[in-house]
Length: 111
Length: 114
Image (cartoon, rainbow over all chains, first blue to last red; front, side):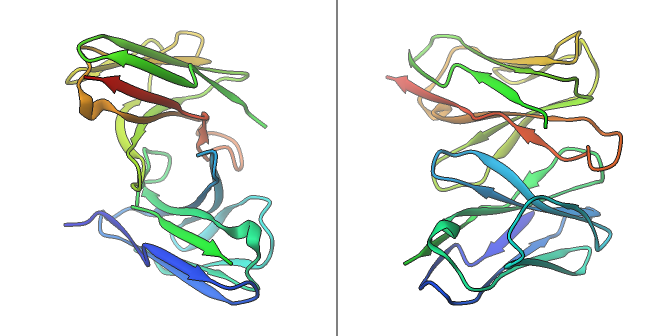
């Protein structure tokens, strides 16, 4: 019954490693997003895909690469992790231009 | 870019009291959304507003889309302990290249004293 799901929930890794976060939605939405929430709880859009096409690409290091194999999935791959990448990452989905529904988040800790 | 000012940043209230929080923007939006985030969870949509002047309720929650399209408020009546959390406003323009992204306020942290 989960609408937007993310895995893993927690991710602890060392600097320099490469990691991926997966997101899936079963709402039939055509648009998916990745957000980063910093330690002060500020939510900032990173990427958005509409029908598997990238439509928003905010100023994010190119170490971050989203991939959308189909409309129900949007994965986030991060290369060469840095300490500053530690944050909570949220996936969200919506029908284009309508309200967004968020996943439970992935807490990434880089040591 | 667009900026959202959300206030207050935090509130401590007694159980049973009413709560009001608001967001103002430097530019107009076509959509205002209100979310609540519990610790360790993702933001949950509370209310979506799509028309200027619209007043919408969801149980004890009421939100309004300001006539100028630059502001919105959220009221919670008769607060209960489970209302504790961080409330976010978010605005969306829905027109023009790249403008359909959500801009979030910085959140209002609500604490309810039993």
